[in-house]
Image (tube, rainbow, N blue to C red; front, side):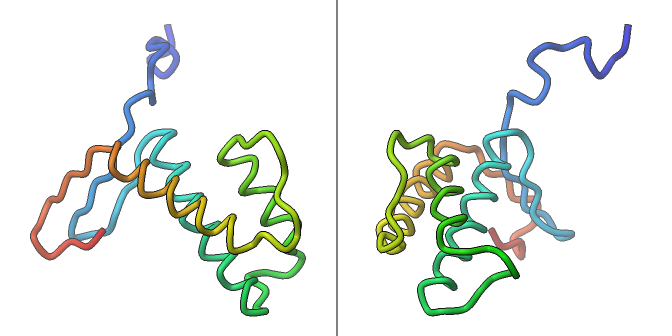
Length: 109
């Protein structure tokens, strides 16, 4: 039996670990939190006219936000601010729900 597939709940526990070597986002929920924070930063860049990477348009950012938060209706192109605010609420909720371990007092989250 393969030890990697023997546990059906493997990866179900998510947490954030901050240590002297960096911050780890462990598990599917923690990875979604990191994706949402990165997407929110990209949307904020798009709001002021800076493209975070070539080909990443407002439409693609809004579609990614809708998919990440599993919303029933897509955002309109003029709703960048609303998407950023919704992502902020989602990020705050997820951050409060995930356990955070800090290995050293100098670590930053």
